[in-house]
Length: 79
View 1 (cartoon, rainbow, N blue to C red):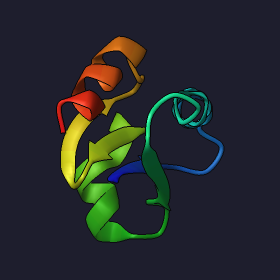
View 2 (cartoon, rainbow, N blue to C red):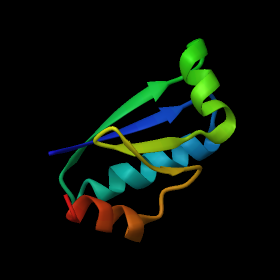
View 3 (cartoon, rainbow, N blue to C red):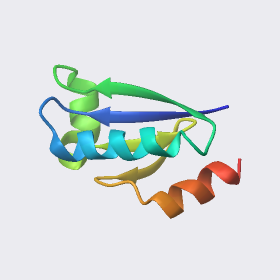
């Protein structure tokens, strides 16, 4: 099963929208969601900064800012 990691920040509207989109896609695709809040983690803040949400599939960066459902489906189905 694929692991989808979402790097986010506190009080991030785009992060909330991305997580909602991913949660809705779980109804049709098999994957787990792991949310990582980068606030207070200097390494992750330096790496991802203002690009959140950053979406990784099995550790590889897939998208940032928004989840494109069609692109996401293709990525998961190609695993």
